[in-house]
Image (cartoon, rainbow, N blue to C red; front, side, top):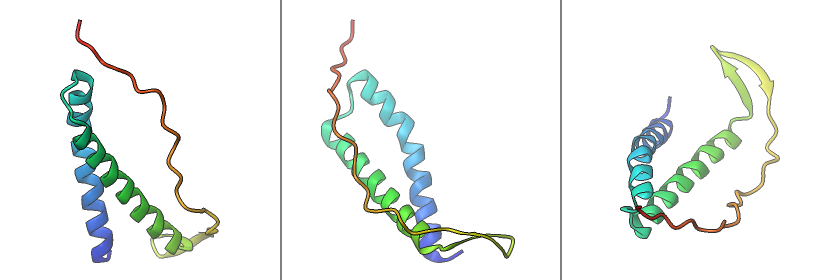
Length: 91
């Protein structure tokens, strides 16, 4: 495993650990817009790195054996359209 792969895996693990606490703060109305935006940007960046890595890998290799060739037909990531924002209230 190369250094970039280890760094990507570490970044994905960190984002995974941060997801539940952020979601809980969001449900309680305690997560700032900036905090949510920063997390979203980090998640998108990690996803782009993962997709870029996947596109560079042209074959599926398990235990040194090439199993199948994969195409590189995926285009750029298009984020979903924004949905109606739900306002959370305590009550």
